[in-house]
Amino acid sequence: MIHVTATAYIVKGRRQEFIREFNANIPNVLTEKGCIQYIPTVDLVSGIERQIPPEEDTVVIIEQWKTIEDLEKHLVAPHMLEYRERVKDLVRSAELRITTSQLNSENA
Image 1 (cartoon, rainbow, N blue to C red):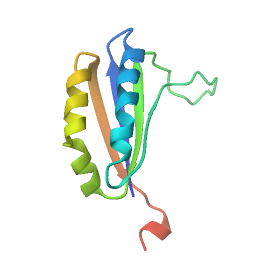
Image 2: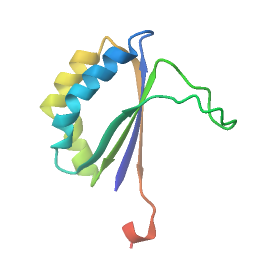
Image 3: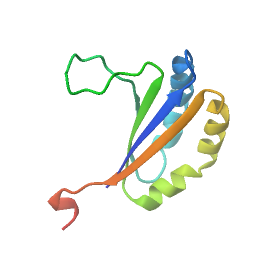
């Protein structure tokens, strides 16, 4: 299983606008082959000492895909190209971390 953690650094004060656009695209993504999970999250002020400082203008997107090929197709899907065009002025920068599960049952 492929796990993606995408961090979007949003233009100050425009996080809710970004989240609205993101949420509007979720139904398209969830119909893609291999998509297991695709959700936007924001920092929670938890009071837990080890937490990195929460950032007000950041959205962390949590994704799960069955295969790397499914993820690659997702990245160039027409609805994703259209989505990126709609949010380009809302995002200052973004980072992508792609990992794979290491559970024994998945790597046997």
